[in-house]
Image 1 (cartoon, helix red, strand yellow):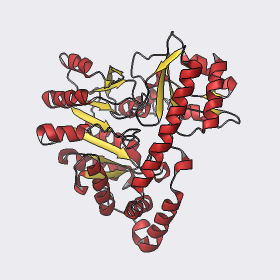
Image 2 (cartoon, helix red, strand yellow; image 1 turned 90 degrees about the horizontal axis):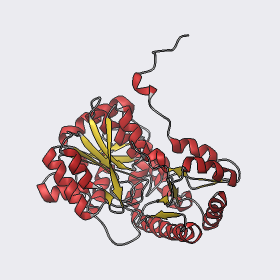
Image 3 (tube, one colour; image 1 turned 120 degrees about the vertical axis):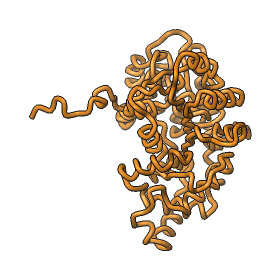
Image 4 (cartoon, one colour; image 1 turned 120 degrees about the horizontal axis):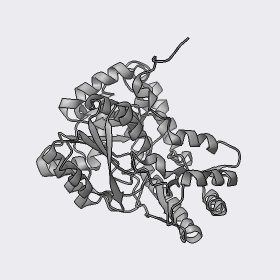
Length: 395
């Protein structure tokens, strides 16, 4: 059969996730993976999940195993609204759509707002799967730089003098892959630019709860409400994957009225609704009141892991690379002091039995080949010591 022309044109340029490909190597015997951005299963609250699952299938099995509302269980949305209020995101259950992880939220939103060749701006570097989602929506991607204070919003301001854009996507808090946080001043500047130039901000917040200090930056959603009394151009998305369990495949998106019902229609066409069983489990888990303590446990563990990884890199490889010390999240972003192609270097590190993610995959354009991302979330202290030793040998 001649299959030429059967695929949609947009699929021709779509590439598989480099991280997914790298995870194949991580399954090889003896390989230590610092690649995957996955939470540590050793930290999952299995007792709480077991209790919540038992409640879900005994207390209200007719809800757990039946079709549900496209927007999600009303009770779960009420509890998500309470969780978001603690983050400064003031929204009601009617403003929320429960999704199959925040990745689906991004996909649904981009399908709802992006026309072919609409311009979306991302930071350099940015979340790889967001690039895939935007490419699939046929957006035209432009990028601006970032530093230790996050996206360089002054560059965006310069771009806006000559370019009309549809929106900006970013992970402003403990970003993936950079680990850095957008400063308060730049948050205010970005929100004001969005209001002035009437573009959307997609605020992706999977890591905001994973902070290592008491410092908390306001969300862009929160700032918009404070400055303008509304957040009509802010789309806020988050997930249970990093604070509870990714296997539940539950996230959520908070949107203004003009967008929410359109996204709900797309979700109806995609999968009707997120898993009713997963929603019921999450609903009961939140009702047990265990999440705050669970988040404290994760924060403490990741803070310790980050300190170990950063200390090892500084001691063993500080003469050849530099990195920003993250204040939260799951990632450490490093750059060689002298030019080096990290994708080529990884062939050497694989021979030594350690894998990471070359930084070039996180760029919409102008990739910095001397960068790479390390995840400290899943490796044990012993594995981190050995992994850094192997990286050093690979040089």
